[in-house]
Image 1 (cartoon, rainbow, N blue to C red):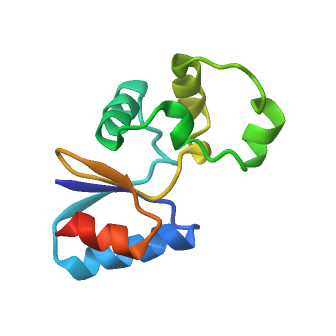
Image 2 (cartoon, rainbow, N blue to C red):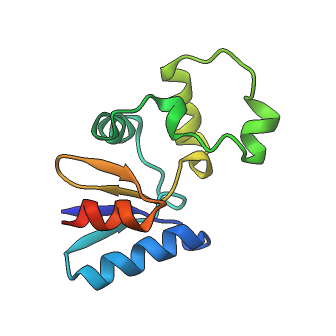
Length: 114
């Protein structure tokens, strides 16, 4: 089943959700700010994205800039940070059983949904 890691306050996330709804595909909304993913769930998503934890972090967010920027952090530390501060997770994320994307561009979303 498809999942969207969704933040309703984000325009890109709302656009992605609209495309998902229009696709007619069954999907689940993951309100990751309300119920943050576990480290294991993040590991699975990162594996499907083929990215390192640092690549999933919104590095312009205030929390990152004030508390973590410039530090030499391990992948495990970065995962802990994402669990504690889910606002730092790039959005929206589209996740299927076998793959995932950071779904910020309509063309990528449409290709993913094929």
